[in-house]
Amino acid sequence: MMLFVWLKMAHVSSALLSISGFALRGYWMLTDNPLLQRRLTRVLPHIVDTLLLGSAIAMLFVWQADPLQLPWLIAKIVGLLLYIGLGMVALRFGKTQRQRATAFALALLTAAYILSVAYSKSPLGFLVS
Ligand code: HEM
Image (cartoon, rainbow, N blue to C red; front, side):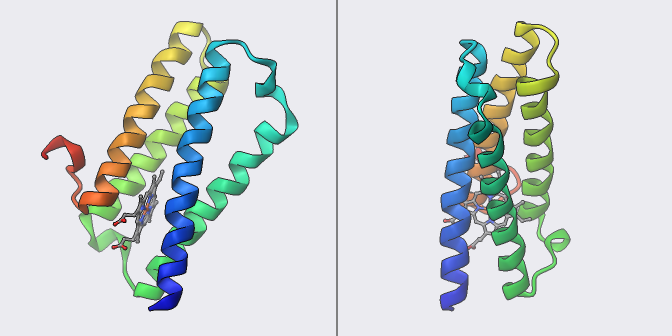
């Protein structure tokens, strides 16, 4: 199905962009780089993440799939919420540099977990293989 292929391409590209963009912003946070406060730095992630989630929802729509019936999709949603929460602590709400750095490292670990779930189609992801 052609539409699905396009949606998946958009999903995979925005997923990689989202994670590499977050890694870059985290690095800027750790090094006190003023680029972190730029308007583009703050707006672009929202556009990329909307594309990421929008393409995911559209794929489920094309599939007529209920994400709550597929354990690996539940794992991705939970992983995504965790990734967002940790990212917010890392880039905004962390009080000390140590808190921010820890949240940043855990967010990257969570992103790796989500990717491993995406490719293995198993909620355990890299925890097993
Ligand atoms: C940070 C969040 C996410 C990342 C990094 C991510 C990453 C990926 C990647 C790399 C693939 C391609 C896997 C492959 O080639 O087989 C994929 C596929 C997919 N993802 Fe995501 N994803 C994320 C969030 C989500 C969410 C929240 C949902 C839906 C609830 C979702 C639904 C899907 C679906 C339906 C596929 C297609 C699977 C297939 O073709 O068999 N993703 N994701």
